[in-house]
Image (tube, rainbow, N blue to C red; front, side):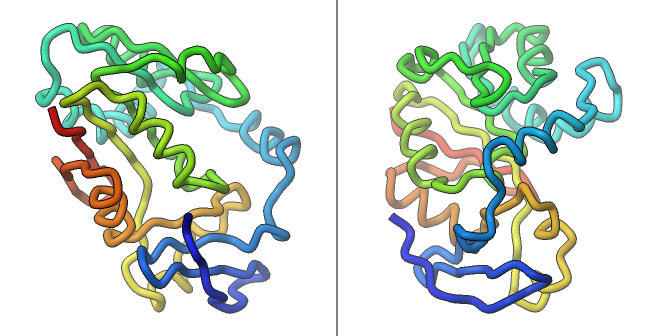
Length: 204
């Protein structure tokens, strides 16, 4: 769905940029294999009880929570080995289940619908973000919210010196225009937009 054009070589990896939505991706031949990718994720120390990690995830929870109806049910997509955000949502009175291709591989959960879906620091790892985001949009009930958290690039000069792109598991880099394109394509409303959090609402 994303037609990407050659961007050039930066720090040993080739990046392609979509002229329509400004998504930048690492060239397919230079991406890690699933086993290499998981080996890096296994080293992450995302302790659900760590106050610093919970403060980090609160950047997504803080704008999301006031926009949810009491008892709203959700899915944390890409929860990782320590599903802290799901635990935080459950504690706040919003029942939340989890899905992760490596750590919670329950595809039947992607065949249900939800009042909200969270996706924190995940979409930058996706080889086909349009496919996954279309799937998540289909899982939203009318009026539901999709909360995405990922750092965004602003201009090519900034991108060249951006440490976020140096993580070998980061292969998709979003611009503000990328989210505007997504919202227009799936007829979603952008509810909240700050440095690294975007909330997209499905029309009721």
